[in-house]
Length: 483
Image 1 (cartoon, one colour):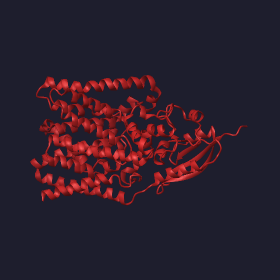
Image 2 (cartoon, one colour; image 1 turned 45 degrees about the vertical axis):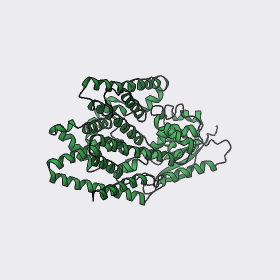
Image 3 (cartoon, helix red, strand yellow; image 1 turned 60 degrees about the horizontal axis):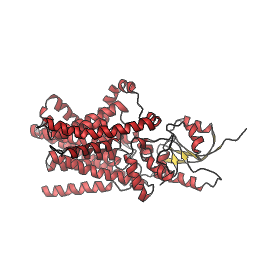
Image 4 (cartoon, helix red, strand yellow; image 1 turned 90 degrees about the horizontal axis):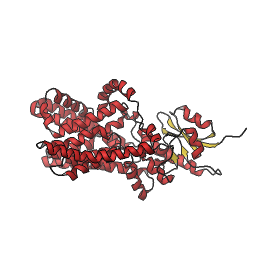
C-alpha cells in the first residue's frame, strides 16, 4: 500500500510539474486575490526588458529608459541566451521560468533529505507541486522563479560544506551573488544561506567561522564591485529603480506587518497559519526546534523575507512566492511535533492540509480548463496594427507603461517603457516613437505629456479583461502642426 501511495504521489508531482507548460501563453488568473496582481501587465516586460531591447532595438541598455537589468542582470542574461536560439518569445521566457521551478522542487527535496527522512523530503516536493500559488507564478517570466532557485541552490550547497572545504564555501558565496543580481532582495535572506554552513560545523567553532568567512568573502568583493559600477556609471537609473524613503518605510511598517500576517495566507490558507504556529511555539515553548538546522534555516528565510515585505512595499502577491518553501517546511515540522505530542490535534491538522491540497488542485484545474488569452491577443493585435501602417517615415517604436510586456507577448515589437531616468517629454524628442499605448486605468498625466508635444490619433482599443472593461488604447503619434 505504501508503494502504491508513493507511485500515485510521484505521478501527481510529475504531472503537475509538466502541466505548468500547458497553455503557457494564457493570462494569469484574475479570480480571488490574484486580481490584485499587476505583474502580469508589466513585470515580465520590465525584468526581461534588457534581453528584449537587445534583440529588437540593438541595445540592452537604453539611456534614460527603464533599465532594471543593470541592477538585476542575471535573469535577462538567461533569457537573452535563450532568445538567441528562439527569438523574442513569451513561450521561451515563461518555459525558462518553469524550468527554474522544476529545479527548485528538486533542490527543496534535496535540502529536506539532508536533514530529514525521505518521507518528509517527498512531502516537501508534493506540497510544492500542488500549491496553486506556486503553480500560477511559475508560469510568469518574472524574477521570483530564478531567485528561489538560486536561493535553494545556495542553501543546498551550504548544507554540504564540511571542515576544510573552503572552495565549496566560496561557491556558496558566488551563488549568493547570482541570486542577489537576480533580485536585489538577496541580503534579506543572507542569514538563511550562511546558517547551514555554521550549523554543519558548529562542533568546531573556529573552523565553522572560517568557513562562513570563506563564503562571505566573494559576496563582499563582488557585490561591492557591482555597487561601485552602479554608483559611478548608473547613478540616475539607481535613483529611479532602487531609491527608497527609509523614514516613510519605517513610519508605515506596523500596519504593513499586520497586513503581512493576513496576506501570508495567499501562500496557503492552512500551511501559513501552521508556519506561524511554529514561529510562536519555538519562541514560547518548543526550544528544541532550534537544534534542527532545517527549522532554523526556514525560520531565518521566512523572517528575513518578511522583513523585506514589511519594510519595502507592503507586499503584492508575487513577493510571497519566495515564502512558499520555508512555509511548507515550518508547517511540516510543526505538524510532525504535533504528531508526537498531541496526536488527535495532529490528525485534525493533517485533515485540514488534505482539504487545502484539494482546494489548490481545484484552482489549478479551473485555471487550466478555462484559459484566457486577453493579454497575448491584445499584444498581437497591437503589433498587427503597427506593422500594417504604411505611413511614410512612421517609426514602429511603441512607448508607454508596460510596452516591454506588449513586446514580449507579441514576439518582439520594438518598444520602450515610458518610465525611467529620462522624462517622458524628453524621450519623445530623443527616441521619436511612432506609437503610444495607454491603459484604461493609466494616470492621465502620461497621455497629457505626450499630447502636449505630439498629435494623437486613436487606432483602436484592445480589451484585456472583458469582464471589467480593462484594456489598451493605441495611438499613432504625428508631429504637431506648426502655427
